[in-house]
Length: 107
Image (tube, rainbow, N blue to C red; front, side):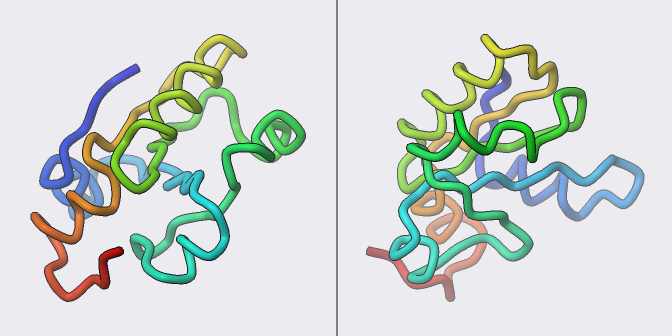
């Protein structure tokens, strides 16, 4: 699993030459409604095993949560199940709000 900082993810998303990753937000629905990175898909952590078929095994995925711990667990789980381009956003949406999008609400 690759660890990405918020500025590294912002640079990736701004680079039209790179394939856009799936932004997989694994937080609870209320957390996603509070704030999320534009374009993120909400699949709460506890539903990942049942919804894994919705994900492409060889596509780039960036796992996101509040501070980066739940998403790291999901990223490791995906890797153990054959996913090859898994990334984790270190610091989660909290780091994104502090370092990239200061207008994003925090909690």
